[in-house]
Length: 340
Ligand code: KG4
Ligand code: ZN
Image (cartoon, rainbow, N blue to C red):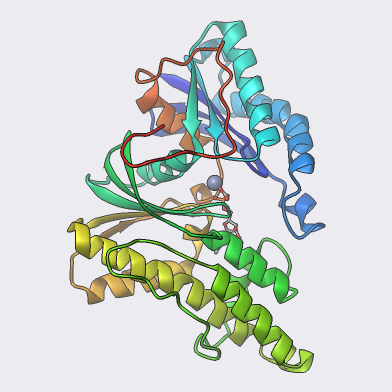
């Protein structure tokens, strides 16, 4: 079963061809980071326009690399929620056009669950497991019973982890995207230089919050001279990054303990961060709970269409959608139990 996947939910245009859910025959991604850097963040209208420009050439390249023709494809898959609505519509309508013309099924994929699936390309994960999705738009914690069954058990009350890193880097004048920039700056910094606040996580709930951290950084910048900030930029970056990650660690550790689950998936753009990976493995060792932590390959941490085509293989027979349905959503109403 050969599935052609499209991902256009935010600022990456990505096309991939995946065989039987796991074998990536091609993956072609255009990141718009350089374009959005100009604005210190993603501009939705600009993102949609660039998806339109890039999607056809990327499809051509993906077919060429896999040595396939469109007539060899058995189904198409596309992220249809959550995301920027104009960006989503580009991928959805492109995929619908192919589905219609070649009379092949179309599978609409929840972008969040595709991130979780990205871990399956390079790991054998046992269920049940917990999945922490940390990206620019989301900080979510799920209990997964199988590849198609997700129960939301925790989420951020305000900003996402990646968003907090992006906003922090912007406040420090370091540019966009903040996550990788802060990671680099932090390497030579002292993470206990500033003690930024960690939210008071109540017993039993799995909530995250980043608004206090952001405000604390803003106040720190206001209360100190520009010279002090410039001289200690690596220390401040490392302290901010540490505080952002430490709460992830606290909540996940508690959730693992409360559920008794010993398999943990960590995915999404922020999961590419080596300091975070280090903090998680050190701490999970400390709780001596024999936790197995699974990460995507670095190249699959951010948005990519391989995770979309891969997950579609497991959903093809589960869905009643057809090419005539227009189904897109800026939000993902993922409630307790179920995968809609
Ligand atoms: O998953 P993703 O590509 O897009 C969304 O679905 O949001 O995640 C993008 C986010 C951005 O906030 C970016 O700053 C963050 O992932 N990110 C990182 C790293 N690489 C990307 N955060 C921390 N460390 C990194 N190395
Ligand atoms: Zn994403």
